[in-house]
Length: 176
Image (cartoon, rainbow, N blue to C red; front, top):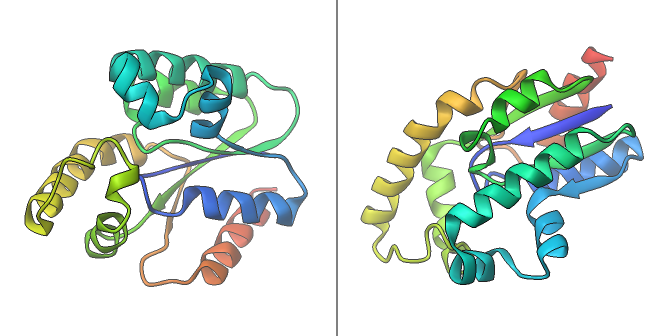
């Protein structure tokens, strides 16, 4: 099984990815951590020192490397990964890869991310909750067309991690 989890930042892709990897006894790869290890810089440092364009190029290269692996894995993408380069096309065309859009409604996403914004370079500059919500609404509108290209949608709105994990496990078991 090769599973790619995609969706906006903060929806729980990494948390779900680690748990589903444990469930199926597969390696878990967080694309951001993969890039950080490769570049020897944190994502915020990469953005600050080398810029977003450099980061997106490295991100696309890392995605290509991972998608070409022969062994099974669970991969969690960054929120913007499907939007840039031809990343979503690569995911869709990759052999034996199942993609799942992890979806969370705007209100829950806003509340969750507003508390984490200092550690996320794309949203760290937003100070008011109103500006923050406007930014999220615009970003989601732009990105959802890519997210909805995934093979499946897993709506985690209002659900705890154990319910979301059960639903994802059930979805994957239907595909095997």
